[in-house]
Image (cartoon, rainbow over all chains, first blue to last red; front, side, top):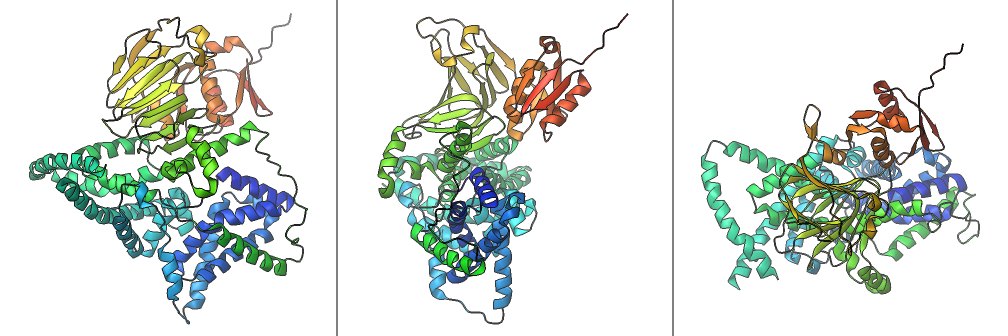
Length: 198
Length: 410
């Protein structure tokens, strides 16, 4: 079951509490509520759970460090994602020389799309196929798709995080959906045949 | 269930693909091809809540040309509802690790469990105003992540889930905010400011009934088996699948229903008069009787009073002749020949600021225009170009006064 998306108004409240009162409770709530989405986001770019955790920790150390000026940040959620992206890119740069891929990490990542297919019109098989399609999308397209779909970012916010135009996000999402549709469609045709056969 | 659901469009598909061959033979095939490219953009926008009303209408049109897409849309919508999370203990452990690091970096970061946490300056229980956005977000959560989950009792919160099952879902907006939500059947609802929409947790299973106070634009998912019914004020609106706007604020003089596409039937809850069928680009205006405006919920079932009812065309404005009644969906505040009182009421909802007109004579002024990005001060300053009045903004309240005219002293 997915984490509940944290309310923008709640983030603003937490932001104020941290900035004005060094409120650790608020800090903790901010961390735990943004953690799952940041974690999946970073894993899209770097296949290591340990590094993902470290990067989130870096982001939040920066937040605590700058807490007095926290209220000046207009959209803290977007800010965290941008920071996470920059830390990840730095990390990738460092890794270039010593590239390793931990298979164990990768497997965990593939399970990230968690749905209960029983509750929906889609079959488990269909879902698997969709997952494969999504994973095979070009990196930028996949990131745009996941930011909007899984993290509920507006196009504008996703554009800011990925440092591209809103139009690009629009195009990437259309491409992603078109490809997913091809995967879904295959199954739909089969289901229809099956049900007609009954 | 799947047999019933799947077999029906299969039959339709044969017809359509037959028709498709004919269409592709004609010179317009190029347009259809373009449409196919664009449609994924529209679907993505619809699912992510980015689509404006024009785009939704375009999507509906495209879907009608290619009903095959309904399936893909439904399946993608289901997949869209999924959202990966992480187990709580996983996150808690990460936070504990993080706090250890924090204490190394900042010697002043207090130990865990120290009683230094200040009181929450935003106590949610004490303030209704603070609750509202949370309610909205609760609603958005339910809707965007799939009501499927919300109404399913989960082991760790079985009690809460049972409560949720009995309670209707409610989405509301404060003055100054608007929101868009997606109902479980794929119906999209744009909720204007100061409005409330409620529906049962069983919505979509046997019935599709919602109650509305305020204003909303509906893009109803087609389902001939289960009509979509809106209860508002003293009318019920029955729909088979269409796009239309309902404006029914308590305290307003009228209830307005504007139909953009499709066909809807409006019936009176007290059966005081026969139902009305609306056609596209028509607007039904039902007068609230003077006694009703204050307490619309208490409308008399025992003493049916006939309401003044009229059907008008929807109005258009601007160079692109946008529809006035639904402009708010595109973030435009539009007013056409409206008295200062009526406009002030709209602006109160739009900006979330209380407005006081201090001189009754100012109500003779009528305004036509639209605001998009202007804040309330800019908006009022723009209105001053049209008519003479003064305004002051104090403690979040706007006071409108007559322009001071010095009397001649002898």
